[in-house]
Length: 296
Length: 296
Image 1 (cartoon, rainbow over the protein chains, first blue to last red):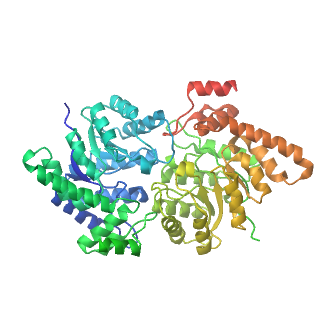
Image 2 (cartoon, chains in turn red, yellow):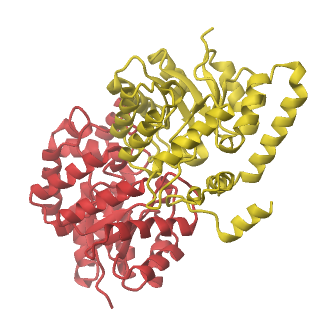
Image 3 (tube, helix red, strand yellow):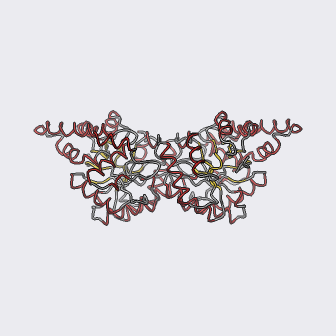
């Protein structure tokens, strides 16, 4: 059986912003080092939690370059490169490879809805063919509640058949464990990563590969512990305790202002209020929400 | 009462593609001249029908430049400039103004769903403030079935109050006449443009400003006739006949493959099969669909 790739705990990292709402490269590098020190296997930057689609292609490239420049190993970086425009997805993916970053997380083109399987296949195929780099490995990104463009099983089947070795995994953020388990069963050797922190543990027990999650910005240590020891009977109690903390933190932060809340908690942890900034259309917590969070 | 701006029949024009799926500037300019000759008041390029969000910022700029270079008056061009990333929306809007194109159609940022009114207000406000050009006039773009980010009345109210003279109109593509009528009633002096061809006539009768539509790629002459003569009792029968043709053409082309179908009919009209090309995730008609269209 093929080794699953990628596997481990990947943080869907926040993107800190400067006062002008541009990405703060220095603070981002600090955050990446912190996450790796906590035990993350890598950084899935420029995803939904990272507000990636609120940044231009140039801003996205610069952030990835900053991470590489800060000494984060390329093999630990999983940037999001899938956007609405085919040519931009190609440009971002080529750029990642040019830096030695070989695995990317790729949303489907997300402007048009109810597109056909043929259309989604054509979109992903065009990216692979235009990038034309044998190093490329793609993690598909299924987050229908945000993208409104689901990644269905027949599409995965076609892509894996047409491009062996390229489509190595999926981040499943729909929050339905049964779907992740079905993916593991249907596609042996395919890396299924939970997009919701509480589901990593049950998914690992079924042969899943790990997670790419938002709460790992706050709970990386516990998630890393669970990942390393979930099969270790002697650590069962500690694993369950860590899982309980992860579930509690996820419950506390889940909801429509999740990203603002995780940023607010990171501001508290670091003592740096710069972390509170959000790029529209997302906004920081209201005074009321912030007070409720401090009280909790 | 303020003069409505923009007003008239605007074609949500198709974007013809070269073999490499880049926009075909020459064919696009030809199409624009054809639409104006048929009686369109202007060209709403780079919208949903124009596959705009499948093109990069650079490709979008180049297409608008090509239209200006081809001699289309700037006052007749209504480019779409609203994308997911704030900084790209600012860049595209500034670029339009730099060419003397002062009125743009602006989608809300469309990646995140269920964003707050505060967030959407902040996004539009940031664009206006960063563009910082008193010439700017924005047509809001309400197409919730595609963008999944509706433009609600309280948002329009806040934007018009905060930026007098900037938010001059809305393209309402939700297809609900009652919503367009309510917009006309609630916002005097606000230009309400139907996004669905059959609804332009009833909307004009209630004080609407015209349309920005897909079928006008095929039926510009009839739409222009309706627009000019809807209030002319002596032409009532001709207006009704034109309306019946518009409704029939719209019914024939409506549905999930609308853009491919309008391109296919344009290929027939011009004898140029280049028109059949679509950029993924949209795809051209299947052989079956094309045969059905030829038979009809």
